[in-house]
Image 1 (cartoon, rainbow, N blue to C red):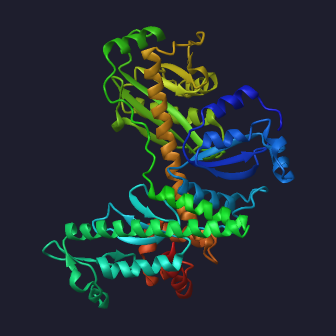
Image 2 (cartoon, rainbow, N blue to C red):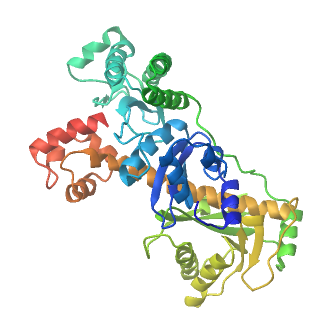
Image 3 (tube, one colour):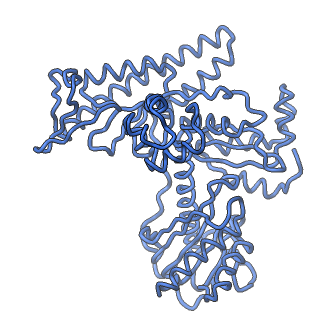
Length: 490
């Protein structure tokens, strides 16, 4: 592989998460060579940097790729199913030279149930985009799945995507006002929200069972493909079965930050080791998050007496430039935050923590000096060795591993990192969700911009009628009809 600082690479590998995600292998110039998915990012990505791996390879193409790998980026997701779908989308977008498995961009359909809706509908989708919905799939048998949904509408009295229920004066709902109301038979077309919710629970239990039956069918087909030595088909079915298993499994959760206040001794210890005049009761921490310079965002979290004060969290989009420059991003967001506090006459925190070392601290300090503002007590916390850097030029400080003051700083920094990554993931998810329009024939940037300017979101666009779609500039009646059918399939 190309020469690279071995210690920095080893440190980067050591901090990889154990969860599912997608990884992007890059060359010295930052070009993406390969996109892959993993159930365990740390274990999978680390194998690329094992010296013995190249010697064991039989494929010259893969060995050649290993010679070019210089760096990597990762995108964490909540399940292997999401990784499967995101991998497909990124391969289509970047078209990496060494990707061959998903060039046909297969995106298998899933069933989504919007649980936060008063009357949850059962919809067909090809992207898992909402944390507040329940998903079943992905399924390779699309026609079988759609027929099952139609049968479920009759059997359980549930709503599909085409429904427009009406709220009646007595607080109950009329599910359908046309011939389809007869489909419910004895189930009843007029129900309360609670009665309908019971139907949804029964239907989801049924669909969960059918999903597992379909998953067994996929495994059976996989075994048959392997028996006839069709290993490429067997591998695709294996990945699909794994994706289905992970969609049906509980979603991975983030670790919960302790909510108890840090006691006075810990606050006093932190203030003492940092050389502060008083314990830092109010602390703020900034972190920058991006993927190869894209979706660059920043987060700021606020702790009061050692406890996350989420009412005072802030998220920032980078406005002054586009690209990958953590220093400029840090300078911008710190400047925006404290200029606003100064103009509003609000107090600065007792302690400002920057995620990073001397470079990040210098950028944050510059934002104060250029605006003629007096900065609060400021430090940087570098991930390597958890070393503390001071804005006043003092020698860096290494706190003991068992120090409660160090643990408090780590909780603050890790929360900023989590909050920034969550915002980054939200933007990526929105972009991936909206990029579905790229697959619609004739959808150029002008029409796409006009659609989103009119409807504001893909969800509202999906709810629009043909006439409403046709009312948008550049979308005629024929395209509106085709787009309406296309969106129903998404």
